[in-house]
Length: 143
Image (tube, rainbow, N blue to C red; front, side, top):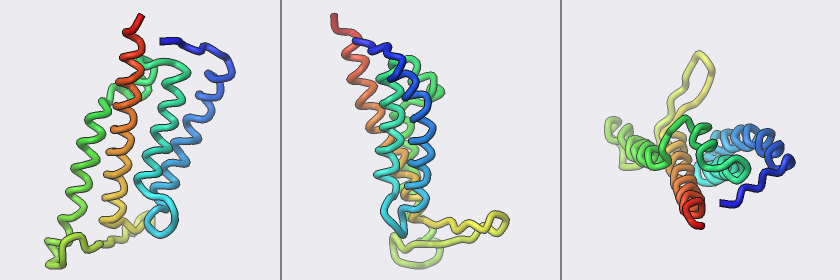
């Protein structure tokens, strides 16, 4: 693998990664009623980690991910997507009917669409990171 090693890329990656991750959370949380949502937020988060990966390599990116395997993120995302359909069944409503709950302490409205969007976020993040990391590891092994 050819590592760029430029000061500009390394500095930009350190400053832009937290900003991109915060923006992805913003997109995730506003996505049900306005443009955004789990898919685009997951892509923005994957872009943040990919920028870091290009600047510092696969091993540093795995350290930043705290050894969370991207495949685990895919599994958690799919599980959250499946869990988001269950509350409607318990309420005796049709499949995939949205349910809303207000959390009084922080005045936040949680919902099954939000749970589904978080699942999509994790699934997209895990998929893209898994693909990019696999490609970078293959590139590292070539002479």
